[in-house]
Image 1 (cartoon, rainbow over the protein chains, first blue to last red):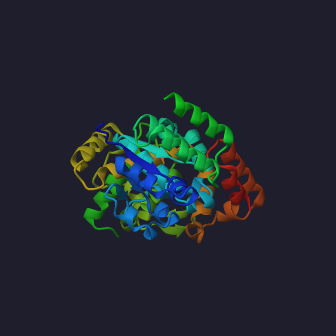
Image 2 (cartoon, chains in turn brown, cyan; image 1 turned 180 degrees about the vertical axis):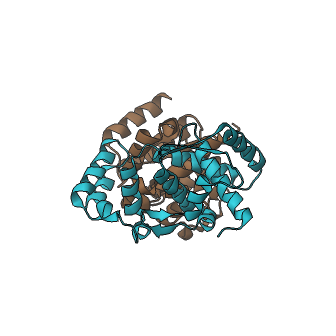
Image 3 (tube, rainbow over the protein chains, first blue to last red; image 1 turned 90 degrees about the vertical axis):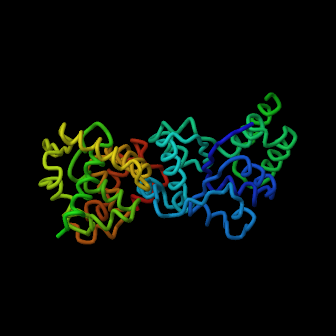
Length: 178
Length: 180
């Protein structure tokens, strides 16, 4: 399947694999399938420097700080969201939308998601959470088998990743049906 | 004093900011603060405009002069009341600048930033705009003669923050930070 998709994810996506469920190999497999654009604050939030293999993956595009779309969003978001780099992720997503590049915007932070829905609603159709994106990786992009996706979801359910049991169960049912 | 080349660049940036959406910039305060936000996003722009702390916060003398008495794009701007838009001549110049600049490094990034700024900041009232900018960049309010209203007056702070919260522009967490 010749896909050329770009992913802009907030820190919780990476942290889910690296720390919450401790499955870096699964993360590597997802990254190999797409082009992942990572912003400076997300880099520092996930401690990218501690993961040489991740830094060296050519599918990880480090966007740098010569242009910071996030500054435009800074006045609207809380310090907590800013420190996690949510403003940078939304800003870069907007740029991808404007230039017509295909992309998925993976954001779990509730405040950032609500801001997008209320103020930049043309990004809504590109917006996913980590769980939903993992389901896509299984059902649409065949990065994971159904069994592997179930293993990931079960581990997420037992981890400190913040997701309601209801949503997780619904996603599992969807995976079985896809 | 700006040299000629720099002046032309300044006028081009203003033309782009005003022309990127098909509605007037709501006020001169919006124009100043929206360009200030662009300079935060593109540090190279800061060098052109020299935003300085002033009576109404971050202020660029060059920007004011370029809109009121443009040198290179003499008839480009239309000022009606407090609103700034492009004249027909300005719209033609806007298209020309877009066409000539499409191969520039960062041209698409610049257009995305301009569009996002207009999309978010045009819908703020002048009070909401100053309230958010002063609180996010308090250093820009250093010499402001009106900043107390936005930084120190608890009643007004609550009023502006509540308005922004009700419009869905800020979250409850941001609201709590702004009213402290």
